[in-house]
Length: 90
Image 1 (cartoon, rainbow, N blue to C red):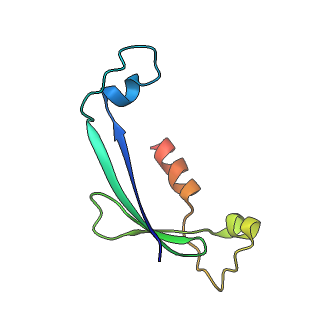
Image 2: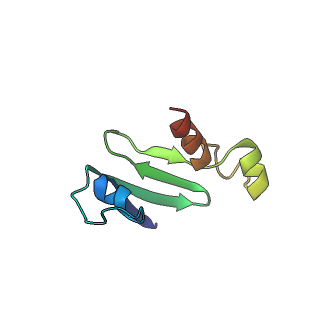
């Protein structure tokens, strides 16, 4: 079982990098601590801040068909693309 950890930060320092303005580092306003647990195939669990249970990611419908994922082997779950679209719409 493979486990990956990712962090992302926001804040003045993160915004300033590459902007041509003040490039000094400041303390981030927020650091997101997320842990991803790969379950095999397209399935994985994301452990997110403020959530008591992990969030299941996978593939479904046209996405599963595109990648040739057998729905009998891997049950359908929302894809990361679904979460990105939901977040952008929020």
